[in-house]
Length: 279
Image (cartoon, rainbow, N blue to C red):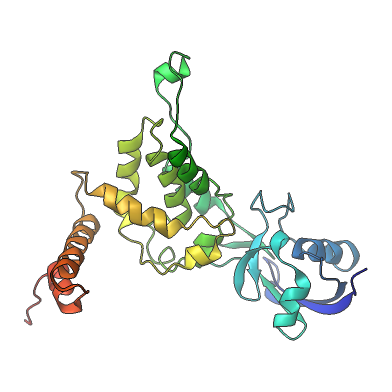
């Protein structure tokens, strides 16, 4: 039997009547107790008014995303005692950032789903495949890449950490780009060009802070998919201020590295933005 210890669970609460406030609960946990189990015990025995989402308890459904001690995590993958030991016996639980809070730890995921749907997140096979005339096949190495980036569980944790989305609604977000990549690079799909046009503008709005990589519970690395998508946009005739600037910046970087062996900031800046004259 593992030894149980008493910890404090401090939860940021919200409802329309009271607004935002904090509640604290004392709870005995052992080293196996997950945050979803702790929340269930609090709701069952201390405060039935508390609201949160949880379903599979196996890090598959993605519904229990929240901030735990300031970091975006899946509650079902988080052990309470480990978090408490990091913070003097207290675990601070908050709703995910970026999203509008509906009640307590429950947030409105609709904006997330809308951006995910924009990339058409489903395979669109050819008519011959649908009619059973052709058998679709994948090379093992292609299947390995697609499988890795197809592991997104739509938890929204990466989006909650993205510094671009709150200030730029034209950016689709890391999760949508990871999902689009999974189909753009699938040779069985028939909407490759259409899908690439959808994400082309957005791909150049990412700042590469890699917060999404840190937040992802499935090690998908959305930033990597954006880098590869940017390369594909050079094949498009599509044009926009962000696309044009991004392409010029990439060319300037390549030129600087090939000519000097390093990134020369001044040269890259001029190659990207041109000379700026004082008026």
